[in-house]
Length: 451
Image (tube, rainbow, N blue to C red; front, side, top):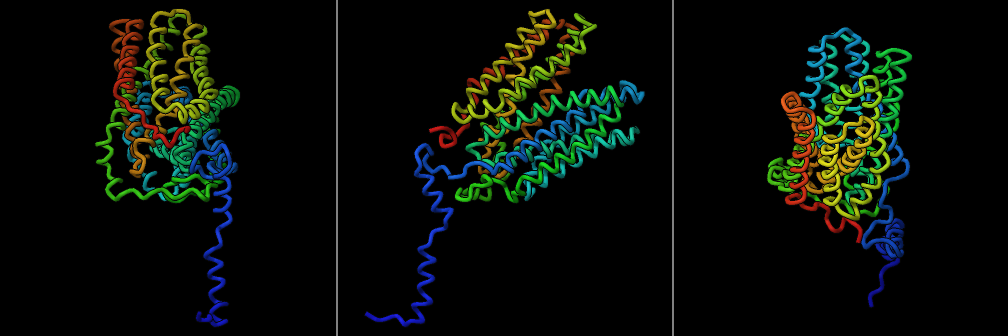
């Protein structure tokens, strides 16, 4: 046996020890994987760090607060500025058209961005800036520009939040995280409406938009708690032993693959039908309430808005957890089924207070779709690198359905009456339910759910 020189042994032994030495995190991962109660192959740290999770909670909450200023307060503010109804309608139309046109480009921007956190912060800044522009310079051209900036920035903000959420926790736990987002968003909407209403009442309507602009500061502070996540954010922060995702083939990223994705096209068609039936329902309820209880109509309409938000805040996290154990389709059926039931009840119930109670069904649909839309899009585009542009495409379909809904319902209400209109909207919602039941596939992969 040939002896190894001392110098060679001294040089070789450390290398041998290094080769045999296992990274402590790897050993910890193997030990924790053997603990009872863990699923096979589940990483030791499957969730984000508490700091990142709380940062995303707060960011979602403050962004919902900020966006509340661009709801009903816009019409009040424009009216106070002595704008005509045609000018108000044109300003709102500009925002709607930009939102419709920029859904897919906004998603493509997020897909191309190396840091989803930067995309979210960039868009949040411009949403806040547009609110300040409205309050500080309420001239015609500035308002039109501000409305366009707000709509374009929002088209980036929504997919960026979804991408950050899925990136933090991984695909297998995305449902619970998206449900948590929806809950904090609902709380933000409710608190934002209450606080901005109080500011508008006690101070001025200008102050509502200055407050909305100021809310971007705590939103950006909350965003700083989330790791930058350069790249596609496919793995959970705080999960060092999670293997990196398999690289997608070069051709997988093409937009053409989305057009050949039957599940994505089917889901988009379902969402068009849903919003075709849903978007006009609450405005029609407001018109009916104004005719039946004019003195309390404003308070009743506010209650119609708050009831679904309360249901959404309470049930969205539960929906997210069920999406992992039950699968997507059973919950999607539940959300779609609530819409025709709601339309039928509105058609045959005349008491305004019962109409407020019926809005519970709107909360059920909102809770389900608030989680299912980004989750199902993530399912059907997995590995394509086109999640955000696909989410924008579905959002475009939703916008088209909503625009057609108000036009269709207005024509029907003028010629057939409110009861027939509610029945027609319920029929369209029922058609969407049939499509979900018969055509829409289950998109959850077996390994994403419970064993």
